Image 1 (tube, helix red, strand yellow):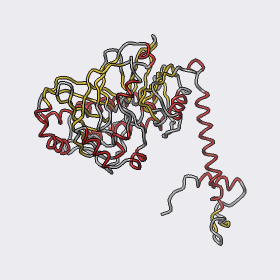
Image 2: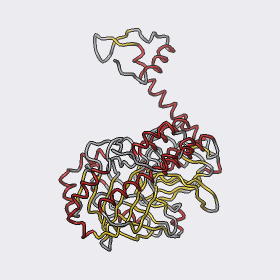
Image 3: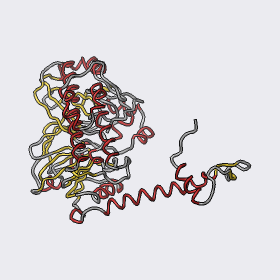
Length: 447
């Protein structure tokens, strides 16, 4: 079967507009003595017309921004590639933008930079929240000394691999029961009832990419369990549906898709976002409890936060929707768990009151931030380098791949330095065991 060509239909129209039969045979300039359908010579023109139409639509979207919301202030922390800053500024040209911040771990993302924070009045950005709605971190402290389990770490990691599902679109071996799956009203409001069965099968799965289950040691020698993942296929499907319903486009270099909170579409999207957020919380809590049961001990502290979500908050006396894409809420006294890389310390931090924290919309980093793309990491680094790094730091790894190697990330303390005066570090957590999806396990639902 011949593969479909997305440019064929518009190219045929251009051929007919030029007075040609699209199927008429004409000489093929690349293959002497051969012929080709007349419409194929219009493919480049069709591609140009499609690109120009897309740019015109984007210009129209940006031109429609109310004057009162133009030139919203942007606070930038750290240094960034010019393309990341330009993407952030483009976001501020769409919708009722009031203020924005770019965290020090930021980099290019789909429609909005990862590490980008934007406050809207009466609106929310579907593309800003992104596809992995409710992606976030959970860390719990146990009353278990690391010294007591040191010799058991390989067996504990093996138990985690047997109990927790990693990798592409995976489902748990046994159904996870949780009240979020039984909330008929929430699934109806989100218009996601048809996905409930798949969501039930995936609840508590971790996925791949930079999603993980880690074991840490704190300053007191106690075990912490840390996990990072989101709403899996539920969030991805919800975002895809509502992005399409709002007329938005998926891609890196596209304008944000913003909807009014009071519109029917806006209300349904917010219901879907809230449902996916609850689902993500439930999944992380389930995974942590399974890991705790493997290790033993009791939970004595817990820090849990989304970093892909929209919150209704008050800033400067105005009620705003604050969209954080790869950014951790950090209001004064609010704690957050922020990971580094598989071979670096993580932190438990707390927001503080300051002029800089207000400019940051009380937001901070969600990780160390990449310094190389995934493809570049595979070209530049070797498994031996990754193993040496982890061995030197006493980290036992199960799974993982070069695109998640420590060399592909910034160093977390340096990134945190750019946010000095907005947060303070309460605990530094040293990893000693890391579980991730293995090489070659692609996951369409990661952030």
